[in-house]
Image 1 (tube, one colour):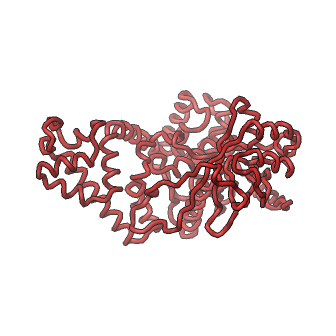
Image 2 (image 1 turned 120 degrees about the vertical axis):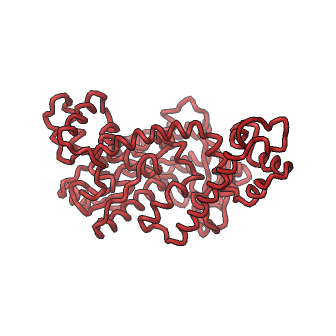
Image 3 (image 1 turned 30 degrees about the vertical axis):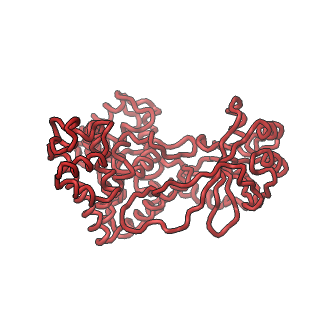
Length: 454
């Protein structure tokens, strides 16, 4: 029943921006007291809680468990009997929906052979009794929602406090944006989140961070803040959006990152603290603490790579090479090495004992996967060389011999800043990339692409 903001969409079109149409949905909200929790499987959060930064403190809010239940044949029968009443299937909502979080109607139709679907019952917060049944997004009418809910274990007597519903919305195809998330056609207009064709809270928050940062830097006439694909998942996501565009609501996954071994949870601080300090996102004190932790990890890494394996207490395992070589064995972990060093009276055992768990884990991961990581680093270096081959913003792609009309249009739309970005445009062929390389060579401007706003 909410009023649609047609005037906002019209204003964006008047500015020269093109809009597309997507759809999404939400689940009904349930009253916690009406749920039979004993009929569901408890699911606690990770302990210890995963973290990206390692300053003392962190999350202090009390944690609430989720619970698992499942749909069944009776649930699916109710959905099938009411499909003609669904906004998603009845033609009222025509936009493209998210493939990776389909509605219940989608699941029942597309995965008809599956006898059950997993449902997570998630508390919405600490000061509310509302429960979010993740996996039950729907646009069926009220009676049908009530009917299928009561077929699910734990929800037979459930009270619905808000019905699920579908939303159709305008989005802006993101190839109209620079890597800074500023609209190419409207200098000073930065866009983030669902309007850029993405779906998900983390995706929106990450874009909001970068768009807000770049809006400030734009006003201060500072260079744009850009994260590369090998630096962060944020860099992967934004490059995917502005270079490849979207034909469905976009979600970020590890599989989208070609350098995901280098984009580990444990090395997020090491990868990004210097950049965050330079951009003013963390203060000098926090930057110093992050640098101290990086130095601590380096000392531990040096200890393991420079200490002979003979220092390990077990004669059966101690052989040639270093402690790091031993650690690469699947049967050995850092805790076992520490015990061996202690048994042999080696001072390195004390250093290991004093190193925080997070730092130990990161060093261990880096050593165990070193061969794969080094191989990936070589690919990163090749990419960086291509990133330095700048493409002028005014290259005349139109009617260029050797480029198909489709490729001309895509190049004109994206206006890639470097040869590397051009190589990632959807449908780019080796022959077309060679044409672009020759066009670039004729301009005699093989220099790093500017990160200023243009």
